[in-house]
Structures are given as structure tokens and as C-alpha cells.
Amino acid sequence: MNKAHPSDIVEIKSTKHIALIAHDSRKRDIIEWCGEHKEELNKHFLYGTGTTAKLLTESLSLPIKSLKSGPLGGDQQIGSLIVEGEIDFMIFFWDPMSMHPHDPDVKALLRIATLYNIPIAMNRSTADFLLTSSHMDQSYPRKIINFDAYLKRDL
Image 1 (spheres, rainbow, N blue to C red):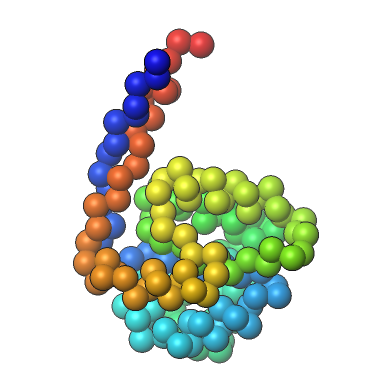
Image 2 (cartoon, rainbow, N blue to C red; image 1 turned 90 degrees about the vertical axis):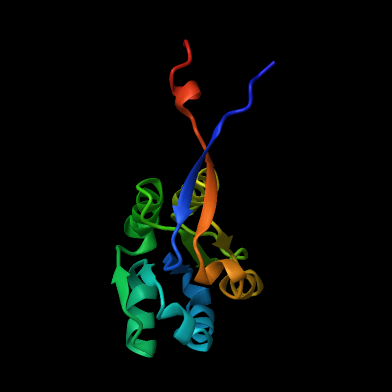
């Protein structure tokens, strides 16, 4: 019988570090959504992959730390920031109807976000629910699995 992994608590502070990502066909949607929620988003630290960050900065004057474009490693940069504890929350407007050359990177990003128990909005409705949650303006004790036992296992 496998023992359950113990959990660690990582505090998400009241000011969140939010990753904003959108596939090309969803860029207009994320610009519109961010425009509707600009006042709330301005209370938090924002990160974005390449073109998404550039378009949001130009269109809405949102202060966003820009990373590489998704296909050029931006998705992996976001994943790395999640692992390092720098990203608390992710909004990723993706296009489920199109194939993308960096699908393996997207899948890896979603795996890391899930593994580290990061809130993820993959569409506008979920983004609305998350951003208007009572947890947005307060700290939140995020549980993550402690994998120490897994790493120390006998191979």
C-alpha cells in the first residue's frame, strides 16, 4: 500500500504574481478580458509570454514582465518560475481547435502548474471566477505535495 505524500503549505500573498498567456487566435480575447479587469490586475505583479505581454502593454499600458514567446521557450520560462515559487496564478487563453508546434511545452507547463497546485484559468469564465474570488485580496495557504519521500526512494 502506498503512503500518502505529506503536504507543505506555501503562502500565496495578497498581491499575486500572475502569468498571462494566450495562443494567437485568443490574443484579442485576453486583451479584451484584461481591459475589463485592468483595475484589479494593476494590484498584482504580471508576467507574460512574448507577444501576449507586448500586446497587453501596448493596448492597455499594463506593466508586464515580458518573457520569450511561447514557442521560443516562454512556456518553459513560466514553468520554471512556477517551480521557483515566483508565479502564483496562471491565466492561459488557449486555442483547443488548433495544433501548435509547441504543444509538448504547453503540456509540460500545465503539468508543472498542476503539480505545484497553481490556480489555472484556461478560459474567460474560469478567469472571471478566479479573479473575483475572495482569495484574490488576501493571502492563501496553497498546499503542495512534499516529494521528499519520492526523491529518496530506492531505485
